Image 1 (cartoon, one colour):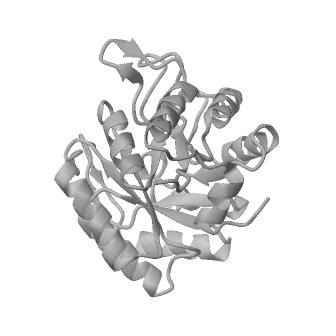
Image 2 (image 1 turned 135 degrees about the vertical axis):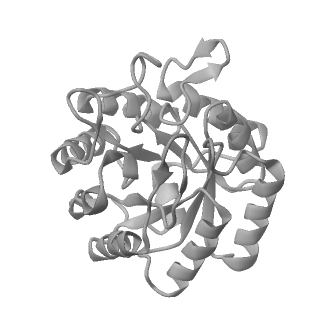
Length: 276
């Protein structure tokens, strides 16, 4: 198996704080520095959230613009992917940064339970976000927390509602959503191959599931995500010193399975994104 593996670094998210791990990057400057180190370790995609001055989640387009500018300067060619996730805002504020034309943006096409709340993605909002991505030529990364999300994404793509090539990420291990279950993972992979053979897929595991799902995805020929958004530890007793350390661990797994780590240029070609 020699197909390059795309590594995505989820640098900050909306939940982890410096109290959880001092390495969590909060300010734009910290995010750029942390992402640069992960880029050097092999990350081709930066999955980006931004925070307000007090560290709380934000959808502020100005902060996204500053982060995008910093990443493009210090991580040449890296794929910039903005989050439109629901913890950072409500309704259409979640897509207010899409006119900045990042390479990609996350898109959840259905609702599900989170640890202490419902993650609401009503059909009208999904339609609007997808429309904004089409208008600004932003390729969605479908964040699938449930089987129905994968099937709906395939339907939307076939109907022409999603810009660019189909790229689906299985998110496994969120409490009250889909657990990191190997039988389910294998079914997801077989479903993608049968229903959307032209598509690319990746997988992300939350918490201690991160390294487990990294290995499943790499071994199965897909792509994968790591980073402090999803997991602040290397193991039960050791905090991760950086996003780069989690990407380096995923890169080591790629080496064990004989898969080269995709460069940003290779990742752009694999995903059908515009060149830099």
